Length: 149
Picture 1 (tube, rainbow, N blue to C red):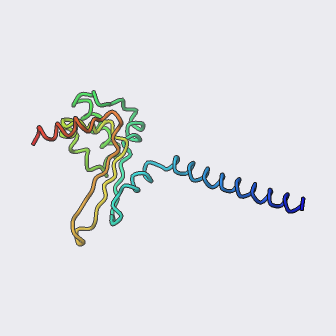
Picture 2 (cartoon, rainbow, N blue to C red; picture 1 turned 120 degrees about the vertical axis):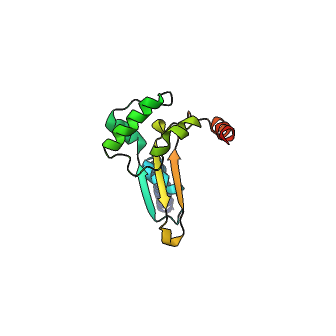
Picture 3 (tube, rainbow, N blue to C red; picture 1 turned 90 degrees about the vertical axis):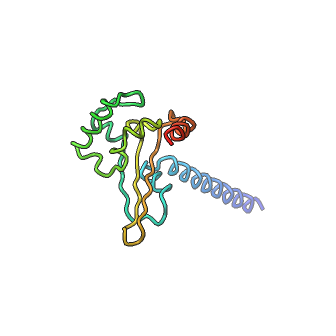
C-alpha cells in the first residue's frame, strides 16, 4: 500500500513538473519572438512576397536620434543616409515620410515595416504593416486624416 502511494505521488509530481515546463517554455517562446515573427503573424496568409524594413535597426545602424519631434529636414537627412547605406530599399513608406508625418505617423519612430504582396498575375494587392510606437495617438491620426480629406 505504501509503495503504491509513493509511486502515485511520484507520477503526480512528474506530471506537474512536466506541465509547468511546457507552460514555461511556451510563455518564454511567446515573449521572445523576433520583430519579424511578430510582423508575419499579422500578415495576410496568402502573401507571396515579403519586404522587411527594421526601422529600429536602421536608426541603430546610422546612430540616428530622430524622433517624432524631429524637423522635416532632420527626417529627410536620416532617410537620405538610410538610402545611401542601402537600408531602406524594401520600404514602401520611406517616400511618403512627409505625408505620414503630417497625419501624426512619424516614420522616424517606426519599429518595423512589412510590405506583403502577391504577383500581378494573381491580382495586384499589397498590404503595408508598420509597428508604431506607443506615443502615436490613433485619435490624432484619425482627426488629421479626416481634416486632410
